[in-house]
Length: 166
Image (cartoon, rainbow, N blue to C red; front, side, top):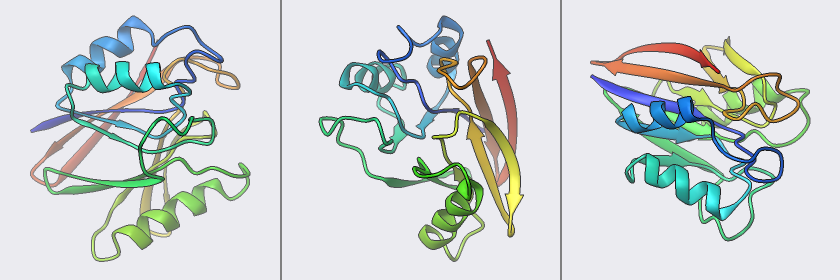
């Protein structure tokens, strides 16, 4: 069984001072960490990478500086589940479909789980057969009203996702 912390939109330091302690504890307890973009600074990226013990799958968000060398889309295979991660930049209108289509195009032979950020809303829905997750903002950065993240467990192809809030 693998435990995967799923976060996004930390926005440190432009909107929040730091990642909350309870999120730090979840990142340390996880086997892998997914960050769906908008670290906001190299310092935030490096801290989260250190907390993930080098087991970080991350993508670029629309506020990330060029010094953060991560792709716009990334794929993580864990325990028989394929996660396709993208930020989902652009208008909030059509975000769900855009993120699902990215997952479908990156992993067409699998039944991927699409993970996105950007809109700071917690999402767990299905779009045309693709499960779409958005953990919200791990720091509660506006327009979010609280800090949120997902903790996923993967066991022999079975995925369980739990929302954590601060």
